[in-house]
Length: 353
View 1: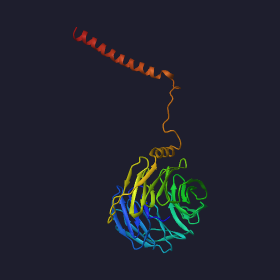
View 2: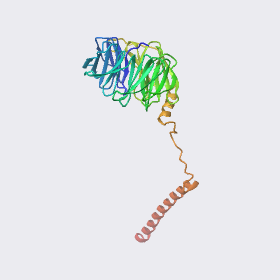
View 3: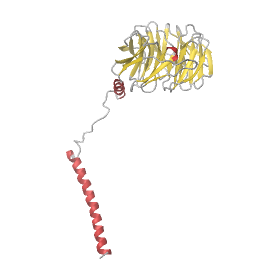
View 4: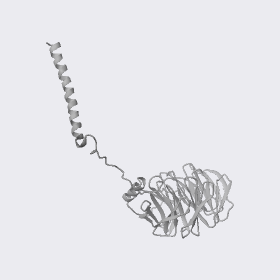
C-alpha cells in the first residue's frame, strides 16, 4: 500500500508530513509551523518537540529544528533502496533500505544490520529494534544490535509498533498479530477488516489503530483483541499515530490530517499548510467513545475492580457502629452544655449574689 510519509509525536507536540520533496510540520494546535524542501522525494519522517527528521529516496537524512524548520544536520546513507525511517527518542535513526537497516544520525556515522527484504521497523522502550520484511518475517535486535529472535507472520509486514508492557504489534496481510518482545513467538491475531498499512498503539497498550485499505482505519481493543470500529474517508490515508491518551492522528494525502480523541469523540483537522489552500473533506467515525473508555479502563486496571466496597460488618462495634457514633456525639454535646450551665450558675451566685 503506497502512503504519504507521516508521523505524530508521542507527546502530541508535532505532526510531520511529506508530500514529494516538500516537508510540512504542524503544531499541537493543528496550525502550520513551517515547510521545507528536500532534493529528493521524501520517503520517511519522524519528529518530537525539538527536532524533525526526514529521509528521501536518495538517502539524504536531514535534521530540522522543530521550532522553525532550520536545517541542523545532514548526512547521506550510502545504501540502495531507502524506503523508510524510524527514530528513537534519543535521536538515533533506523533508516530502512531494501536489504538492510542503517542505524545512524543526521550527524553521520552508521552501523548496518543486514535484513534481506526489510520494509518497516520500530523501536522499543529499551532500545530494541523490530524489523519487518517483505517475506513476512519479523526480526528483533536488542539494544546492542544483537538479534534476539525471529518469527513469521505469514504476509509482507506493513507496520510495527511496540505494545506495552512487552509485545510488538505487527500488521501484515489483513491482520494485526501480537508478537513476543524477543520476536520468537507470534501469538493472537486480530482481523483488521482490510489490507493493512501502518499500525499505531496508545502508550498504555489499550487501543490500536491500523490502516485497513487505502481510505479506512480500523480501531481495536488489545485487552479483548476485538475491533471497536472504523474511521472512513473519501481520500487516501497516509499514516496513523497516537499522541497522549487516546488522541489518534490520521495523515491524509495533500499534507492534511485529522486528530480524533477516541475517548470523547472530539475531532480536529489541520489548518491550511504554508502555500496551500484549505479544503474540507468528509469522514465517518464509527467507534463509540464509551467502548474505548471501557477498553482503556480494563487494561489499566488489569481486569480488577476500580472501586472496592469496604465491609465493616466484622468490626468490633458490629452493626451498631453508627448508633455508637451518634450516642458519643450526643454525650459530647451534653457534657459541653453541662459545663456551660455550671459556669452560668457560679457567675450568678458568686458575682451577682
